[in-house]
Image 1 (spheres, rainbow, N blue to C red):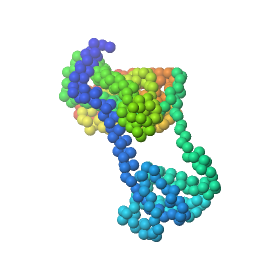
Image 2 (cartoon, rainbow, N blue to C red):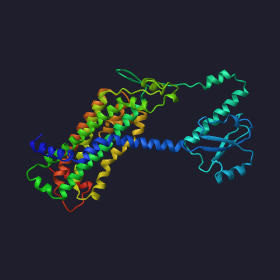
Image 3 (cartoon, rainbow, N blue to C red):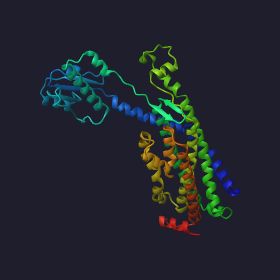
Image 4 (spheres, rainbow, N blue to C red):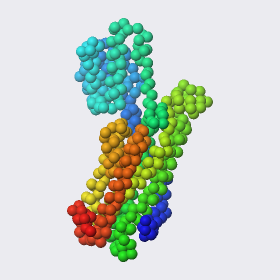
Length: 431
């Protein structure tokens, strides 16, 4: 590293670290993300479960209505002896939320149940619950008609728990599967936001220097490559500091998750005394504190840093080739597309972290910063696979910074013309 690169990097780092924006985003970034996810989850659950439904039942069998009972009280069933046309009009007027038609042959298996409402039921929490209630009622009646003893009913209705165990070379980890997925999602989303934000900061800085003609003075004493590398590394150091702090916060959040969850648990609802300990509350609530290895946080910071360097070099090349933000939009789309695809495939990665799709995405350098970190947080990945992905990312950065520097040295001195991809390729090929 030359002295000029260090001077530029130090200037870019200190200029941004001393701002209020950096302090606020560093302290509140993860908290804002967690709050955002919590609000979305709360609103989604509330919208599904908050409204109680009143359902009229037209029971052609004459015996199934007595078995329809929602223990949660969210669905109230009302038997109706009115003609179906009258019940239909009552639903349209809003007297009932809908009506359930039970065919007289449904017990024998040749009939069916049909629910009519103004919203059609949809693929919502209510429709799934209604289906389960009708199925369980019909199944119970069929067993009664076959003179099945009550003991068999208890056996069939007995709850069966399935414990999830994570296997690794170091042993087994019981429970916490959902927590691993949440941690992986948060890490992947933080890297997505950070790479996009910091890459844009680099691009905006390059564009601003070009527009103000400051760069013409700077390049008279600093090589374009040194200027570019210093700017990328300086902003990268700021991002590394921020992501390291966030990794520590996430680790602390995982360690304190048991205490936080226990504070919101009511011993009475879990059939426990008021003096129940935290361990007893968590055990009754079937909550297990996940044991996440420090290597997860180390790779989280490492993949972010290399991912940022890769994308920052590409964003800087775009910034040097344009003079206005509007001109950069068309050039940014191909660069942003892999980052967007990483988020689009985040759910499949969480569901199947060892699938072919997950492995391929974690090896492609433009998607591996997010994909590999998410996989590593959820499941055990061989060291050689993580190392190979990281080395590919390192090699891709070296190649991208070489190409970006060749575009940068020409683009920063080009004015009055909107650059195209053909121009960028031509500039990169200039000796």
